[in-house]
Image 1 (spheres, rainbow, N blue to C red):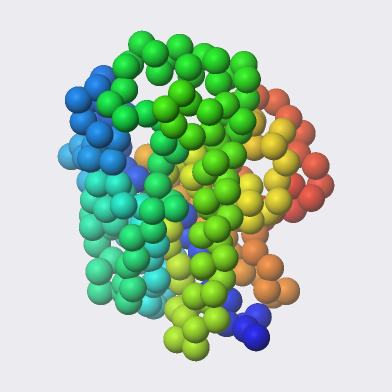
Image 2: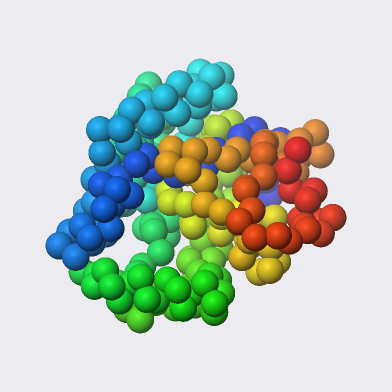
Length: 227
């Protein structure tokens, strides 16, 4: 059984840098979501985030789990942390929410409006996933990650390179947030981070909360998730 002291000191989450689709969603009509690249600015954002992460990790080894999408792989590459990364594992369960295949922009915009009224967690895109589907696969990934923590050479730092919604759902699952609270949370910006920091009691707290786009007063248990 894993001793609690084997748990990593830090679990950092980072959203990919600015992608071409962040500037023009119509690219989804001709380019698969998983193949959308970063913009030059997105590479710069990732490089700047990498400087922060290097300081955070105190120059110590890092285990990485990365979504297999091109923009997340490019973000990882542009972080400039290769000398610290012992293991970098592609993790499909950390991929973006599936919206469709080649997308009809007008149809997706219509569905986004429906999602706003139906609920971001439960609304399922016609040819894709709901937020609850992503929650389920993130839950499955957590089981794998905890098994990895039990390895005797498990590093003190873990990095997840993923997507905005996936980051929010990871934290929702980890901290047992309510659906109502999740519905109010805004995506982090491109190349923005959130870090789970291990506390003296071996539990974790976020370095800062997610911004909210609608009003909801977090319950005490939800508020206790961050410093």
